[in-house]
Image (cartoon, rainbow, N blue to C red):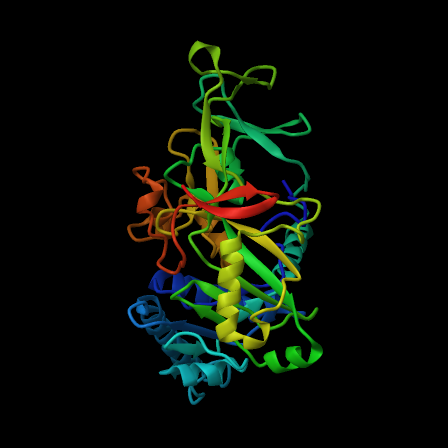
Length: 435
């Protein structure tokens, strides 16, 4: 299946590329992916290694401290490998560190090059940066097309197809009323995954607020020296200006839910005709409530964000980019994450249905792993011993043993804002409301 090129959350101007993770395993995997971004994946202007500035306020710096430990260790490994190989450059022995400690707001101000500052301390990692997300996805599609082993089909999956005894998934039913059948179905539907499987307590779609502001040519030149900024106290982040003169700023938060009542995706069992059969008591269709992405297909640039998100973005810019503090948005959008309780991917065979493999749960950090995540998926699918061993990704990304109420989800510790936010509509404008 191939989604419309304007719909997925990764079809966007920019994504952070970093190995700056508090978890050493994700830091190492991201560092592996970065080597690809520095190569062909990032060619033709797709990757920009301008640096990443991580900041925090006192009492909220745990993620920054752990990330710093991990990237320092990775930098040491790169330098050792380069020295052993007798190479110079690209992290070779004798090259200065690309990690700069920032001990005060004045240090941060000097690192930002925007006239502003955020947080009390942090560090600047010049080995991180950002990628043009849309260009990268088009490049990935070209790689897949070049294999000539994949047939692209643009349609919408409305439900999975099950065997009569509901023990096996046999394919998918499409909005065009066509069906696709297969011995193995791989469900990689991102934030739409919870509409096709009952993932309550396992994975949930949450909308994140993003705004874009147009800058003048003079401002673009001034901000061009700026790194990507990620404040771990608030979850706010901002990019240097893109080629079209836009500054993107966003909130890496616990996000907004969009609860919708839908037919239970695992009770809509397909009969011989390929049509769903009701299986609820008394012949009634069983329904569940899940968060469903709310998108603007025709005019994505006009998608409004909750007022609280708008206010948070402007408050953040008043510190990092004072010149933009009161500027109107050129456009806004919601970016839909597929969150899991600990922020881990969900990449595994389904424990109940034969013929179904699930690959979802990006939790807002999937894009940067694009050059390497496919290999991990295949290794898990094939049951390779290394990845399935104790401590391997196959275990970590496996099907959870229990479903956890979302109030107890911690994610990976990098989010800002409050929990339990829900999208609402009032006088045509979205607002924030508590569950």
